[in-house]
Image (cartoon, rainbow, N blue to C red):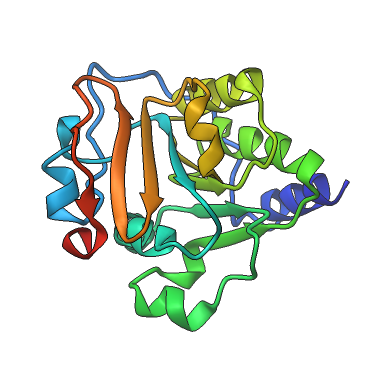
Length: 205
Protein backbone atom coordinates (compact mmCIF):
# COMPACT_ATOMS: atom_id res chain seq x y z
CA UNK A 1 0.00 0.00 0.00
CA UNK A 2 1.17 3.54 -0.71
CA UNK A 3 0.88 4.61 2.93
CA UNK A 4 2.94 1.64 4.12
CA UNK A 5 5.69 2.39 1.59
CA UNK A 6 5.74 6.07 2.52
CA UNK A 7 6.05 5.30 6.24
CA UNK A 8 8.76 2.70 5.66
CA UNK A 9 10.72 5.19 3.54
CA UNK A 10 10.53 7.76 6.34
CA UNK A 11 11.73 5.18 8.87
CA UNK A 12 14.54 3.91 6.66
CA UNK A 13 15.78 7.42 5.91
CA UNK A 14 15.76 8.13 9.66
CA UNK A 15 13.65 11.24 9.11
CA UNK A 16 11.19 9.61 11.49
CA UNK A 17 12.38 7.05 14.00
CA UNK A 18 10.35 4.22 15.47
CA UNK A 19 10.30 5.00 19.17
CA UNK A 20 8.78 3.27 22.15
CA UNK A 21 5.75 4.85 23.87
CA UNK A 22 6.90 6.95 26.77
CA UNK A 23 5.47 6.59 30.21
CA UNK A 24 2.92 9.34 30.73
CA UNK A 25 4.08 11.98 33.23
CA UNK A 26 1.76 13.20 35.91
CA UNK A 27 0.73 16.11 33.75
CA UNK A 28 1.63 17.12 30.21
CA UNK A 29 1.91 20.70 29.08
CA UNK A 30 -0.92 22.06 26.98
CA UNK A 31 -0.04 23.22 23.46
CA UNK A 32 -0.98 26.91 23.10
CA UNK A 33 -2.89 27.54 19.89
CA UNK A 34 -1.00 30.78 19.34
CA UNK A 35 -4.29 32.71 19.35
CA UNK A 36 -4.62 34.36 22.80
CA UNK A 37 -8.35 35.01 22.50
CA UNK A 38 -8.97 31.32 21.78
CA UNK A 39 -6.52 30.06 24.40
CA UNK A 40 -8.36 32.12 27.01
CA UNK A 41 -11.50 30.08 26.33
CA UNK A 42 -9.88 26.65 26.42
CA UNK A 43 -9.16 24.67 29.61
CA UNK A 44 -5.42 24.65 30.10
CA UNK A 45 -5.01 27.43 27.56
CA UNK A 46 -4.65 25.51 24.32
CA UNK A 47 -4.79 22.18 22.52
CA UNK A 48 -5.05 19.26 24.98
CA UNK A 49 -1.76 17.32 25.12
CA UNK A 50 -1.49 13.70 24.02
CA UNK A 51 -4.98 13.79 22.60
CA UNK A 52 -7.03 14.01 19.43
CA UNK A 53 -8.66 17.37 18.66
CA UNK A 54 -11.26 17.82 15.94
CA UNK A 55 -11.69 20.86 13.71
CA UNK A 56 -15.04 20.74 11.90
CA UNK A 57 -15.62 22.80 8.76
CA UNK A 58 -18.00 22.96 5.82
CA UNK A 59 -15.18 22.70 3.29
CA UNK A 60 -11.38 23.01 3.20
CA UNK A 61 -10.13 26.58 3.22
CA UNK A 62 -12.14 27.98 6.13
CA UNK A 63 -9.08 29.21 8.00
CA UNK A 64 -8.12 25.85 9.48
CA UNK A 65 -4.45 26.19 8.55
CA UNK A 66 -4.22 29.67 10.07
CA UNK A 67 -5.73 28.13 13.18
CA UNK A 68 -3.03 25.48 13.59
CA UNK A 69 0.03 27.10 12.00
CA UNK A 70 1.29 28.86 15.17
CA UNK A 71 1.38 25.56 17.07
CA UNK A 72 3.01 23.70 14.20
CA UNK A 73 5.56 26.48 13.76
CA UNK A 74 6.55 26.28 17.43
CA UNK A 75 6.87 22.50 17.39
CA UNK A 76 8.82 22.39 14.13
CA UNK A 77 11.20 25.12 15.30
CA UNK A 78 11.93 22.88 18.28
CA UNK A 79 13.01 20.26 15.70
CA UNK A 80 9.97 18.10 16.33
CA UNK A 81 8.31 16.23 13.47
CA UNK A 82 4.95 17.31 12.05
CA UNK A 83 3.19 14.86 9.72
CA UNK A 84 0.32 15.49 7.30
CA UNK A 85 -1.65 12.38 6.37
CA UNK A 86 -3.26 12.57 2.91
CA UNK A 87 -4.05 16.32 2.92
CA UNK A 88 -6.82 17.36 0.50
CA UNK A 89 -4.42 19.70 -1.30
CA UNK A 90 -0.66 19.61 -1.74
CA UNK A 91 0.81 21.93 0.90
CA UNK A 92 2.03 25.24 -0.54
CA UNK A 93 5.56 25.31 0.82
CA UNK A 94 6.05 29.12 0.72
CA UNK A 95 2.84 29.64 2.72
CA UNK A 96 3.87 27.12 5.36
CA UNK A 97 7.36 28.59 5.58
CA UNK A 98 5.88 32.08 5.78
CA UNK A 99 3.81 30.91 8.74
CA UNK A 100 7.02 29.96 10.52
CA UNK A 101 6.87 26.20 9.97
CA UNK A 102 10.30 24.62 9.55
CA UNK A 103 9.88 22.68 6.30
CA UNK A 104 12.65 20.28 7.23
CA UNK A 105 10.46 18.97 10.05
CA UNK A 106 7.33 18.65 7.89
CA UNK A 107 6.49 15.28 6.36
CA UNK A 108 3.61 14.42 4.01
CA UNK A 109 2.25 10.87 3.74
CA UNK A 110 0.26 10.15 0.59
CA UNK A 111 -2.44 7.57 1.15
CA UNK A 112 -5.81 6.46 -0.14
CA UNK A 113 -8.81 7.25 2.10
CA UNK A 114 -8.80 3.65 3.29
CA UNK A 115 -5.11 3.76 4.16
CA UNK A 116 -5.17 7.22 5.73
CA UNK A 117 -6.75 6.22 9.04
CA UNK A 118 -4.23 3.42 9.47
CA UNK A 119 -1.33 5.73 8.63
CA UNK A 120 -2.56 8.41 11.03
CA UNK A 121 -2.94 5.88 13.83
CA UNK A 122 0.56 4.48 13.28
CA UNK A 123 2.17 7.92 13.22
CA UNK A 124 0.36 9.07 16.36
CA UNK A 125 1.24 5.87 18.20
CA UNK A 126 4.90 5.87 17.13
CA UNK A 127 6.09 8.40 19.74
CA UNK A 128 8.16 9.90 16.90
CA UNK A 129 5.77 12.68 15.87
CA UNK A 130 4.93 15.82 17.79
CA UNK A 131 1.81 16.51 15.73
CA UNK A 132 -0.15 14.51 13.17
CA UNK A 133 -2.80 16.12 10.95
CA UNK A 134 -5.38 14.01 9.17
CA UNK A 135 -8.57 14.47 7.15
CA UNK A 136 -10.69 11.36 7.88
CA UNK A 137 -13.70 11.44 5.59
CA UNK A 138 -15.83 8.61 6.91
CA UNK A 139 -14.43 7.77 10.32
CA UNK A 140 -16.85 6.12 12.72
CA UNK A 141 -16.72 6.29 16.51
CA UNK A 142 -14.50 3.22 16.69
CA UNK A 143 -11.96 4.67 14.26
CA UNK A 144 -11.86 7.99 16.11
CA UNK A 145 -11.41 6.18 19.42
CA UNK A 146 -8.43 4.34 17.97
CA UNK A 147 -6.91 7.68 16.95
CA UNK A 148 -7.53 9.08 20.42
CA UNK A 149 -5.85 6.07 22.06
CA UNK A 150 -2.95 6.30 19.60
CA UNK A 151 -2.43 9.99 20.42
CA UNK A 152 -2.42 9.18 24.14
CA UNK A 153 0.01 6.28 23.66
CA UNK A 154 2.46 8.26 21.53
CA UNK A 155 1.95 11.51 23.47
CA UNK A 156 1.13 13.20 20.19
CA UNK A 157 -0.99 16.19 19.26
CA UNK A 158 -3.56 14.72 16.90
CA UNK A 159 -5.60 17.07 14.70
CA UNK A 160 -8.48 15.70 12.64
CA UNK A 161 -10.22 17.96 10.12
CA UNK A 162 -13.76 16.71 9.47
CA UNK A 163 -17.00 17.76 7.82
CA UNK A 164 -19.11 20.16 9.87
CA UNK A 165 -22.07 17.79 9.55
CA UNK A 166 -20.26 15.48 11.97
CA UNK A 167 -20.94 17.99 14.76
CA UNK A 168 -24.25 16.26 15.45
CA UNK A 169 -22.49 12.96 16.15
CA UNK A 170 -20.66 12.18 19.40
CA UNK A 171 -16.88 11.94 19.36
CA UNK A 172 -14.20 10.70 21.77
CA UNK A 173 -12.01 13.72 20.93
CA UNK A 174 -11.46 15.82 24.08
CA UNK A 175 -11.65 19.04 22.05
CA UNK A 176 -13.98 19.85 19.15
CA UNK A 177 -13.89 23.18 17.34
CA UNK A 178 -16.10 24.30 14.47
CA UNK A 179 -15.10 26.92 11.91
CA UNK A 180 -17.94 28.69 10.15
CA UNK A 181 -18.56 32.11 8.64
CA UNK A 182 -15.40 33.66 10.05
CA UNK A 183 -15.99 32.31 13.55
CA UNK A 184 -14.61 29.51 15.69
CA UNK A 185 -17.00 27.79 18.10
CA UNK A 186 -15.93 25.48 20.91
CA UNK A 187 -18.32 22.53 20.76
CA UNK A 188 -16.62 20.39 23.40
CA UNK A 189 -13.65 20.79 25.69
CA UNK A 190 -12.34 18.38 28.29
CA UNK A 191 -12.01 19.88 31.75
CA UNK A 192 -14.41 22.76 31.28
CA UNK A 193 -17.69 23.94 29.85
CA UNK A 194 -17.78 24.95 26.20
CA UNK A 195 -18.29 28.72 25.82
CA UNK A 196 -21.78 29.62 24.63
CA UNK A 197 -20.66 32.31 22.21
CA UNK A 198 -18.46 31.78 19.14
CA UNK A 199 -15.21 33.68 18.77
CA UNK A 200 -14.67 35.85 15.69
CA UNK A 201 -11.82 34.21 13.81
CA UNK A 202 -10.18 37.61 13.28
CA UNK A 203 -9.62 37.78 17.06
CA UNK A 204 -7.93 34.39 17.03
CA UNK A 205 -5.50 35.33 14.27
